[in-house]
Image (cartoon, rainbow, N blue to C red; front, side):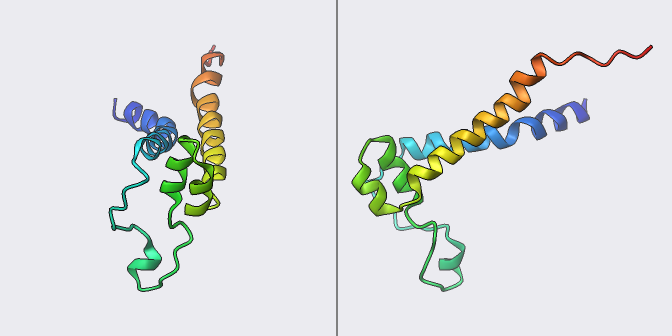
Length: 107
């Protein structure tokens, strides 16, 4: 039973976490600046953060506001493409492909 749960978690955690993050970023209000940052570089005192505004950029992209999306972070629209591709690949690998696999038959 414990190995079944571990196996299920290992197969589905990555795509579920990425899909949840993408949905949450799409639903967030990009016009509100909450002031908090999870950037490691800013936490250690470096003012530059390469991922700064990525969540806002993704939220703006889902709203079709391309100019604000690219202004927040140029990588935002590309991050959506990469995340959706990865989620699709993992779903195909872990869910769709496994439906057609034949169970091991031992003689």
